[in-house]
Length: 312
Image (cartoon, rainbow, N blue to C red; front, top):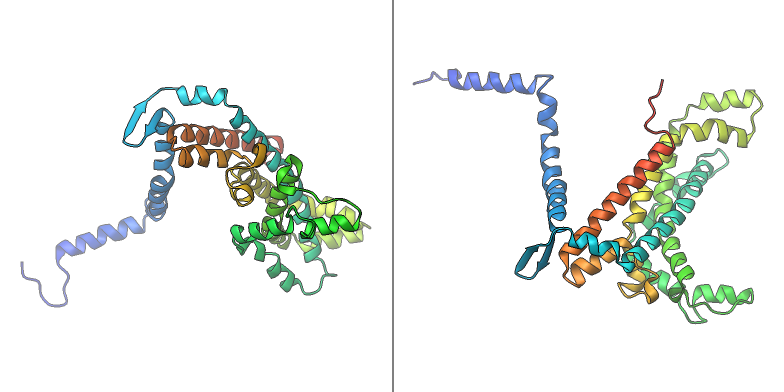
């Protein structure tokens, strides 16, 4: 059909009308805009999750895949090294929560106070460790906590009359090394989360508290803490997840050969079984159990603090 110049063909006109009706529809348009995210989520998260779940019921060798039912999970129940890794991960998560929740909160309050000078410089500086490669940081920490008397940590101990410590060869000192490296890396990030929460607290509340005679501690307890509750829940939840899936802090100190498995974590055990020994099926089973443990731990925490209660 011949179309005159300047006029739109009826077919194209109908297509434009249909497209506009879809894009401007309040019921359909939101689903179209979130569709790219849904597709990426299914491809990048949904497919690997389903595949890992299937692999956990298989014995996978080079060029050979065999369905073995629950054998990988039965082996997991009597695997002492898995329980050792789980205990190390739980202990590491506990200590990181003890350090990386209250201290960043107090540091953020201090940075946000009127008495603090050069706030912007400090706020930028505390974020630098998060941008530093964990490999580089691990090498520096290994030098600082070396076994020789000339290492930085042992020199400090020598000043107070304590002999040199073999930091990477003891269970307690090994855990200390992993926690202190995590604390150095994530202290600034958690502080920024709490700083963002502090910006949303109305100043009127502090002024009203001062009029009522509240001191600094009372204002922190009755104004700051309640208003930081959503941020605290978020930071604690991501810290629990990060703690159980910790890999780098252990790997930079011992790789996969820590003495007595003092640095063995669940994520490192997955790497050891799945990549190093090429036992992908058993590694997938450990990964699924780790996912279940993180999910249950997070749900228990959220239930304990009342996050599921409906606000009036």
